[in-house]
Image 1 (tube, rainbow, N blue to C red):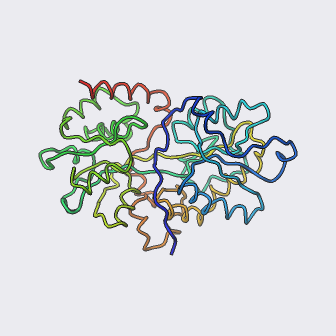
Image 2: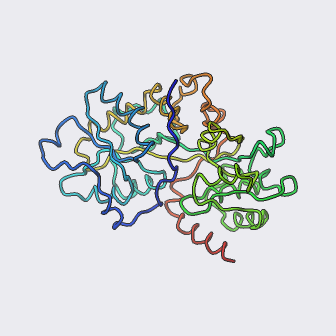
Image 3: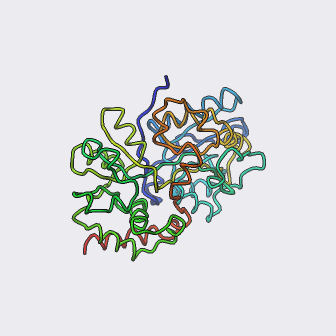
Length: 362
């Protein structure tokens, strides 16, 4: 049986990091010799901890074994550091960078990434997770959740409008603060009857009006991705917006949490090759490996509870895997979700955060 790793924090960093912070956390490997730069070695900037362990076990170690290309995994990936990498006179030390959706959008606008090589086969990925210069290899799902000890599944809310129903469900709800993403704003619009294809561009007046209908006194705001789990398991709330993977890990540890995939919000991380990469050819070999190898995608999903949007994932996951409850393994379930709009947040996240902060103070 596969050993599963605990989840990392889904939003590991602020949306934009200052250059001072970037300079204080440099990539751990430095290639200064032109000879070294030509070897079959590549560097990927991602994240540390158990998430990095999962990336290494599912993708990098098998890739090294099968191709002979050495992969160095660094942490502290960020848009700010990617900008510094491109400006390096000797070429980027990173070959591949792992960025959240809004960051990959800004990296594209600022010409930090190469277009995907023609040899990269993306036909095994659902097309909405392929951009001209990157692939959305790890996706997270934020859903309506509940405490089964208080609300049985048959009586639980199945979408955001039902979670907003204070007549049927009394007490407080736990929702994520608008700080590094706009999940709660999207949920507020869905609760107010906006169809998934009409969510973007966001009608902020309507979203905050929906918050008013729910009532400030009925909301406990989350500042971390683990807080809704704590709010539910300690009895502070019976209902919450939460990430499926967090709920799955909690249930493995003895919690009794339920959730609905209906109108779940999906967004995640993307891989792209740096425009000034020293080892671009090897980098695109790794991108192709991740885009095509369904067996490795299944391993990564088992380890992390994150969706790899590979069209064969459903057939490759073990039939009895509890991860199936936490990821949309089929197109039918995927189509019930609300896709985040990275381009929108690239332009409007700061405005939304300011508006939310002002609303909280009124």
